[in-house]
Length: 138
Image 1 (tube, helix red, strand yellow):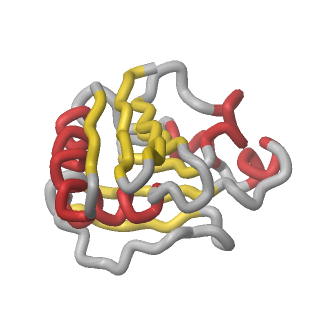
Image 2 (tube, helix red, strand yellow; image 1 turned 30 degrees about the horizontal axis):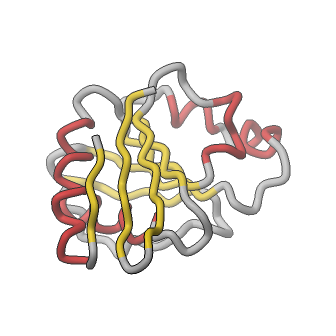
């Protein structure tokens, strides 16, 4: 599935579709260049799921935890700063990924060998002033 959005208001359609897909996959990998809007999209998704906390990138802590009244625990990972998969293993990433919680992952390519067999990939591509969101189950 592909959705094009020109502004933040149109992100609601993207996050609504991601929210629907959470019934199939609780692990969602956000792929895109630096500045593509991964954190913004995750924040909008969390907002749509009723999270009241401030959603921000866990660049230095690697993981933030949020609570959704409807979906339970949401873990938000940012693996940009890790240098190898061993760092993710040391922080217990497998326990998170195989829990019933929703796991939103920025920079999943850094832990590619640790990802579950099935997950939802959200690829963000920039096209002039628009962004194209490609959703696919892996």
